[in-house]
Image (cartoon, rainbow, N blue to C red; front, top):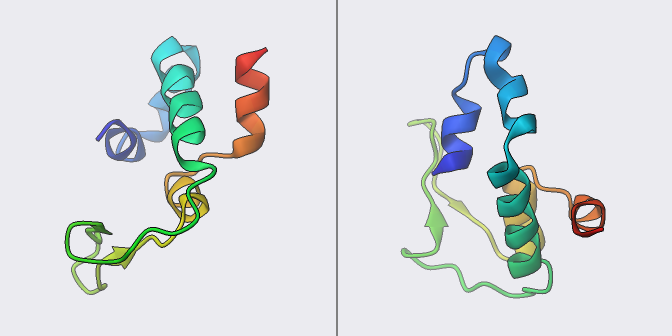
Amino acid sequence: MILSILSSLKPYLLWMKYVSAYYYGNEALQINQWKYMENIPCNRTTKVLALDLNQDDICLSSGDDVLEFYSMNPVHYVMKTF
């Protein structure tokens, strides 16, 4: 939810996410949750709804796919934990 809100921010407000402790903490938790998930079965409950009406829903089949979809880089996790 938060990530979809961030993607709809005006360009001149995007800097605000970088001063939020919640943003960094959430990204570290998400990376920790998803980085070792190797197989996610694709079914109706695990599909991500496409924002474009002309596009099919997206099936994310691994934790790396989830992180890539939400633009989270596992390399950032190391920087956020030290």
